[in-house]
Length: 377
View 1 (cartoon, rainbow, N blue to C red):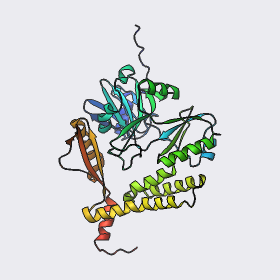
View 2 (cartoon, helix red, strand yellow):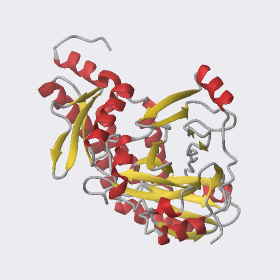
View 3 (cartoon, rainbow, N blue to C red):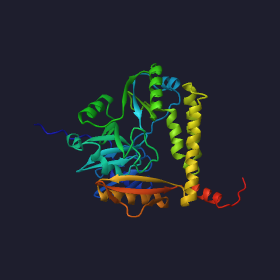
View 4 (cartoon, rainbow, N blue to C red):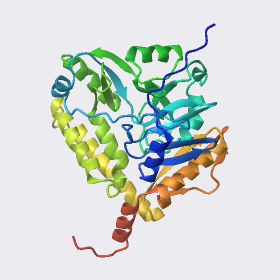
């Protein structure tokens, strides 16, 4: 049997370039157990923020941001000239999964090794696929109520978390695998994946309108449109996803930028008018409930516990990874993250963590208001 050809890496970074980037504060050096790596905090030598530089200089590019269209009819015709694929957009957090030497790692969008995702990978995929394809990089979304980063979760993940592959790359090679190669590998390796609804043209507005309304009814987040060129991508989200975002984050009203809420209200109005949902009393009721329910909960938390926070729960296969996660959160979350005593604890064959993230401005404002102090508006 002939030897396997050596991969040709076109994405790499020499030590001098990396050292200069670290000195200038555009990259950081990190260590996760035996792995030493760098993550880019700014663009360096054409590599985007969030890119990971492995010890051998191979660069795993940061996952690109996908621009948003606000209307189907105008957006599709403006952004696409030929065919494109429509895939489900899932409300979770983005990871890049790869093999380096004898370990499989999951890197966060910011370029950190994620101890939680790395730990849980064997629950979701057969890691033997990296024996067959060691250069493969899986881009996936991890979503569910028991995740350590987000307050919300898709309705179809009732407990714990699940993983969904949506793109693939090769180590050190620019660009994503073509769609048909991705689909073939998803089938070959029996990978969990985002729903792919087919191939469309810009003229297929009515078909996509029916699809997005179906997803809206399901409470799904929306669609990602992927053209034949990977630079040609766009996302379009459902009206219900905006209401959900407001509901799960309204307790943080003072801690998030105002644009977080105003942007979603504008997008909701655009969605409603495009799809003829104006003056829908149920939608109006759900939006009001979404905003007030979180604020009511914040007031109650302030009364009973003296602070406004969100409680997270997640579980790990290995205790060591839970401890890595605690250290990572303490380093990146500061005083706002408080772990419960006795963590991690053994529960049903896993190591469970519970911790709270405190919303400082909401905590302070409500504490003052409830204390009886006067305020000049």
